[in-house]
Length: 346
Image (cartoon, rainbow, N blue to C red; front, top):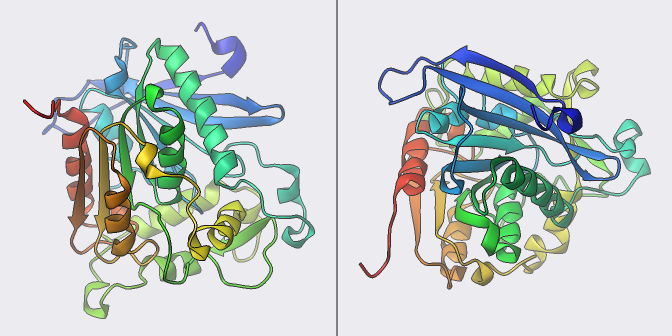
């Protein structure tokens, strides 16, 4: 391949199996380590129809993760035989995910190999925007396109929103799933006290956070059997150091927690959504206790210069509706937005 010398892609194809979609016979996956700055390489995964590379920018999507977990175990985890990444590929798209530094398979800076309290928080939103910029430019160059679609979840909505506000000319459409905005409730990711370079997250605490705000009578059937366990195992596997602890832990950079204290929890935004000038779609679920509904409505009102905007509120879902019984409502709503070709005024 023409970029193998720089990015060392690993390529394979596997059979796809969803007869209800007009899908390719097989899906190819490629993995890249993309330079962001000296000493920092970003893990980028791509899936597309096997044997195809001629995608226009409006058929390309890049996903970025939230504050704690890597991209692959949210966007490309096989649940009931299908990941969200596969779902979008089956609709004719060239789909990518990226891990910000310190997350997943991207470079783990040296401070992550030391006790957390020895170093300051790192990988905040401004740094994450730089990492996404490197991934966007890599994809644009690889496919020879000017613009692509961006999709962010949770903290990833801040990363993608801020990037778009600075780079409207490189973005076709913007999808923000669980948008972050000014906070007037406590942050579930901040336990208080002094924070170090990173935090340790157990899977027990992850599930407790996941189910925060869910009515007791609804908890039992919210997550289909085996789905949480599959996600937990895949997530711990992305951190070989934390995974060896007893109990196994995930190390997550604390730059996002520091941002919460300095900006969102202090009534200050890190960027202005009014600078976004591309079609924008917001998705949210009613039991999201991480980034509650008031943030969705406030953010929607700030989108004053987009060609058009829309939001969907999904019932009986949490911040992690992407891996719950109602996930297909999210998938289909986002897909409709990506596929449509609206021209306001016509």
